[in-house]
Image (cartoon, rainbow, N blue to C red; front, top):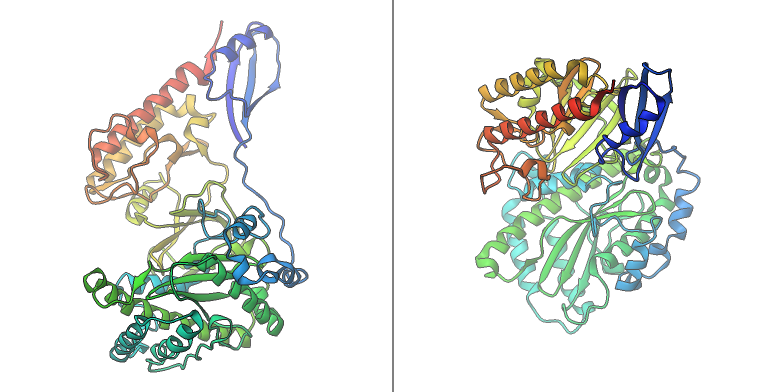
Length: 540
């Protein structure tokens, strides 16, 4: 609940109405209620609290999954309905309208209650790192690169042939696909079999990969990736029957591959509970040698290299977890990132261990925020973001104007994770009851703070009041996602909050010192207006 507190010295109680008419409409909206905490004699103070009930941090009750997860999976529509039917657009749309049945495919908007695939299983992050050209990915050295490239060429040649139907295509192509995954120096990856479009057995009772074949793009009546998820759901149920404990304690990952004619695309599929996270790992690539002037072939090399590393990692994790099953994952934690430790900060070999407890409701597709508990029972804040200026955060924290940093690490898949002090009783500066008392000092401190990190060649990019917290008489800056070196970091999109665009002259997205000065100036003008016109009124 957001609260806005005003003190009003009144000669008569009836003057309250006059006071309310002077309060900005943004505070007194249809979603806002007015609570008069106390009414005192004339000449005293009247404390009015506006309560905006639109923002509530959910405290979901955890429940055991062991009793009903398997039963829910058995009854789920994605399991009892044939995959070819599940993939039909009307059936898919009916699933998506039911929260208990939907596929978490980030359509039409990102699914806020389920973390990205790379945070649910780090193997998918490694896949993406390989696609990005990173060379320090675990397991990459185990690939026989020369042999794999050669096998991909043979596979592509077979893919480019014409087939009368999908059965003939599958029968011809699958052996060549299996040979790609044999191009390794260590673990042997089980072969894919023609049944159910090519799943393979593993120690946990299901498989690591499912391949969906479509002979031609014309005449397809089912959405391929949804049909693929239907096969995974059935495979996953079979695995639950074989190794229930592993499935209750692990978000089981699967690699999906869709083949349509001479085109293919890789997917991540993860069993969150009885529902599944589905997201593409690559674009659709052509097996024609000259496609995209040869660039598609290079991307195929990368994609199959990443796929081989991923399948080997899944098999390794299955063996480890079958021998030592993890503790049961309770709802709703199954949708949280599978991250329970981060490297300490300043950088060291020590790690901060924690357990995520609940998520904040206001999340973006590029950042997720959680409250976690350490082994010492301390509440902390853990943030996952696509970009993060730890240097900027560190400078502000050392000056006492940002939450203390506890841990920081780059995670697979291009995500950054930072654990920090949780300012539980902190409020946005425009809602602080201390604004009238300390506002002038805070204004001076914020200007000095900005000048300090500018002198270090850094910019913040979003110095709005929403990113300035107050606790008692202190002021702290937060949200360092967009920060970095002046002139080199950029806003992620042109679709920015209007407060960031007002008065902006530059036509590109590069963040500059001038952006910081302009935004902070407008923020402080807004706070001055609250102090003088709304925050505290003395009516004599």
